[in-house]
Length: 306
Image 1: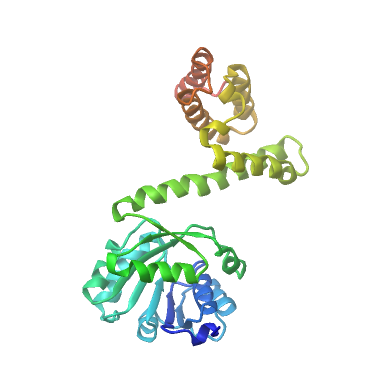
Image 2: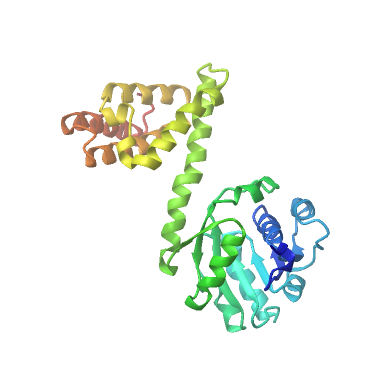
């Protein structure tokens, strides 16, 4: 079997934006036989990250990255992407036939339109993973789903690149990208906030090892939710224990008022879903929603009482 570097159609790879994502993807492509040749980064952290994950790859301005690479990874924050693409196209940095790949979850390929007019080949490859900016990320790409959007004629190329990085392509329609990204934010970003808040409250209640306490519980909850969806709902809201929920809100108002709004929002959403799926009995739901409405009204009138 040929070594990766001896396989056909190996590409020179550049990274514009050496944040946590770009260097990891380029390092993964290197393992598949492609050749990272340039990276750009502004902050000291970006330069260090590029040096760690892409040793001996020079850090140069973005225009120079495009001059050297056949495949360019645009791994900048979502809000910076349109301006970056427009600027690169306007200055003539984009070359015909160049593969231009962005990793934003929010955008499809339409954001690359200025580069497309300059002859670039546009791909949107969004790795569905949180990144640390270390070599661990390269290992975690194995089996990672990628949200992929590409023109029909580039679907095979997009699929090949994802598979070479160890990922699994999941095709997302251009018009569905914002909804797809919102779904991931709810699942991953909000989960981190909820877990961090839970750890904080457990410490405040005197638990010495909240991470050890939460680990098995959250692991089981996540596994059950992925397997069964709403059928996995448990706890006082799903059971309709209005008194327990009222007690929770009272304690949170007393000890962690910053957590009340999030608790109420999630409790209302959980109650709605449990009721819709037949887990919460309608007669219990009335009392529960009454409690949630009462505490919401009290808060709206400026009161902080339970």
